[in-house]
Amino acid sequence: MPNEIAKSVRHLWLLCTPKPMAERVDLAGRTVVVTGASPNSLGYETAKTLASWGADVIATSLHDTKATEVCLKSDLSGVGADGNISVRSLDLCDTNSVSNFAEWFVKEYDGTLHVLLNNAGIHKNIFSPRQKPPLSADGVEIHWRTNYLGPFHLTNLLLPSLKSGARKSGDARVINVASHLHNRVSNEELINPTKTYHSWNAYGASKLALIHFSFELNRRFEKEFNLRSVALHPGSVHTNLTQTQSINGRIGAVLNRVNYAMTSLVLLHRKHGAQTLIMCASTPTLQGGHYYERCRVKNQATRLGRHLPQKHYGASPKPGFIVSPNCKFMGFREYTIQTDPVEVNASNELVWRVLTNKQEYGEWNPFTSRIQTDFKIGSPVHLLVRMGPAKFRITEVLCAFDKPRLIAWEKKFGARWLLFAKREQHIEPIDDSNCCYCNIDILTGLLAPIVYLCFGNYIRRGFRDVARGLKAFVESQVGK
Image (cartoon, rainbow, N blue to C red; front, side):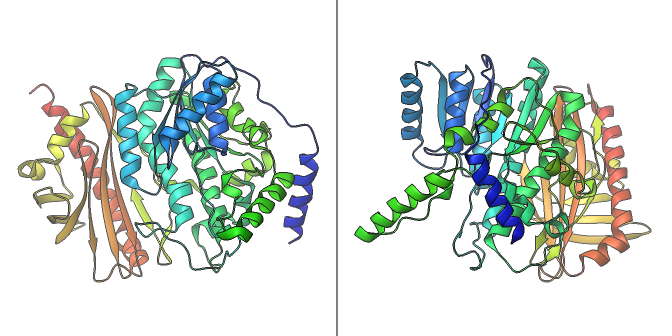
């Protein structure tokens, strides 16, 4: 409680001090994606300003995209700006919506992006935080799904476009909008949650994960690709996120107006709250791998972010793959087994053809020497797997088939809570004639730690041998 009081006092003091403003930068030739840009939001203010500074802005909104686009263009005309801005639909809770948006962007903008600003987010049950956890349609806690997994998914899909933008311009960046509420949850609680559900803690955990993701993204891609990533706290801002649900009736209308007036007195205006977003998206002197507040680096939160072990993001510092931090299913930790991505001197299409050629598996794959499947989602995948001196016949279910980037199958051993395993094989193009290949195995359930301890090294060694065998075999096929 003393910490909350101190935060409130600091906020009220800052509310009375001069507000930092981002310096105008010529953004001509820059392509920017801003998520969560519905009217009365930080994203709206940010998209409008960046477009007025010359950027080609693609804003996203959950509802009324045409109306939002009309409002943005009208506001730009009102200030005498001739900005290039459009609005597309995007629901971060829906994996299909995220995939469709990314696919549209890559086609429409030739796979080149300079700035991805992950601003969209939600905070549910603000005044009734101990209610039953709200879930997304796919059964994930809503804050984690929207505020972390959604931006994580979108960033990964747009990563090749960001790297392309960085190669062409020397500068691309990912800006993740977090919150000072990230300190409601410790790093230990993020990985091994023990507290009773509280919506404010769930919101804070999603933002803490986003901060760690920002730092890890920067660590992996800044030096090699000039792709920087930061997280930021915009301040406590009066936006549509802070509004309560409408109360019906005449009394409700009065109460909503009173609530709006009161919150506008104690919270920052959107114009001021957007300044840190605008500055991070535009300034040439951005320091990647840091946490920003009030248009400058805030070191305390940056140090906090450094303490999460990198093992929770996967082992490799190489480009192309980012694994989500280990989270929980029904309270069980996920155990991720991953080897370093292997660079293959061949196109990802050729690697894909080899991976899906069932007759040739035994020629190059020492871990899975036989496979039988029709490669249709939901179909069985019959495998002959070697772990150490033993061989196992396993039947799994195909759960992903994204040509030519991802193939995955999964298996429940009894009930999912007992043991659940999922294997993913990723192919990430580097250019037209080179790609990276990576194996990931995810275990969860009551028996997961036992399987991890007993077979983890065999699986990891098998994955390494698979990658080496695939690389050698595919490269021998180039030109044939």
